Length: 403
Image (cartoon, rainbow, N blue to C red):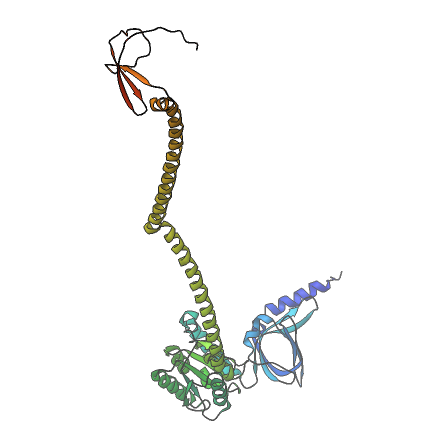
C-alpha cells in the first residue's frame, strides 16, 4: 500500500532538510538585483539573478541597518544570509541579513569586524559623548581644502554667524596616508583650542571613505578633548568615525548647521528676552510701588505722630464739648438763679419796705410779730425804706384783723 502525504507535510519535510544543512545557514550569494521593492512595513523584497538563474530574496526591516546604500534594480551586490523554505508557499528564498555592493565585500567585512571590536571596548558608549556647545567662536574643520565639503561648511557657517572663525586643517581624505593626515589634523586643532570640530568629507564609495573607517582615526576622535561632529559622505553613508564622534551629521552642510548657531536668531531672541525682562521688571516695580503705597498708608494710620494728632484733636473736641457744656450749665444755673431771685425778691424785706411796710424789731433785734410779750416802755426799732426809727412802746391795743 502506497503512503500519501499532505502538502504541508512535504513542505515541512523540505524545510527540515534546509535547516539541517549548515552551509545554507550562512551563505553569501553574488548577483544582479531585480524586482526590488521597498515595502511600507520596512521590508525589502528582491531577486538575485545571473546568467544561470534567479533566487528570491527578502531583507526584513530589523536587518536594514546593515544596508549602507539604497538598493535598486541592476545593482551588482553580495548578499549574506540564510536560505530557508517559506512553508506556506512551498518555496525557498534567501533571507538577507547584510548586503554589500560587489567589490566591497572584503572592506565591509573589515568594517563590521572593527565596529564590533570598538563597540565591545565601549568607544561608542553614550556616556563618553561630549555635548556640542550652543554658541561657539572658533570652528575647526578637518577635510580636503579643495572639496565641496569645505565650501558648504564655510558658506553655511558664515551665513548663520558671520563672526565665527573657521580654522581649516587641509587633510588628505582619500588614498594612501589619508588616515594619518586626518589624525594629525584632529590633534593639531585640539591643541589649537577650537570650540568644536567637524571631521568629514563628501560622498563616495566605500573605498573612497575608507580612511574614516581606520582604527587610528577612531581613537584620535575618541581621545579628542574638543567635541567632534562627524560629517562623512551622504546621509546613507556610515563610517566608524560616525559611531565614535560626539555627534553625527548626515552631510557636511548639516554639520555646519549643528555646529554654528544662527546669529540673527540669537539677536532676535536676545531682543525678545530683553523686552520680556523689561515687562517683567516694570510689572514687578509697579507691584512693589503699590505695596509700598499700601504700607505707607498703614504706617500713616499707625504712626505715633498720626495717633498723637488724632488724640490731640480728640482732646480739643473734648475741650470744646466741656466748654460748651460748662457754658450751657452756667446759662442753665443763671436761669434758675434768676427764677430764685425773682422769688426771693417777693420775699425780700426791702421789697416790702418799698411797698409802704415797715419792719419792727425789739431791742435784741428780734422781729415783733404779735403783742405777746410786749409791754409799755420797751424799746423798738422800726426799719423803713430810708432808715431806722427808734421808738418806745407807750401802749398796747389788741385788734382782730380779717385774713
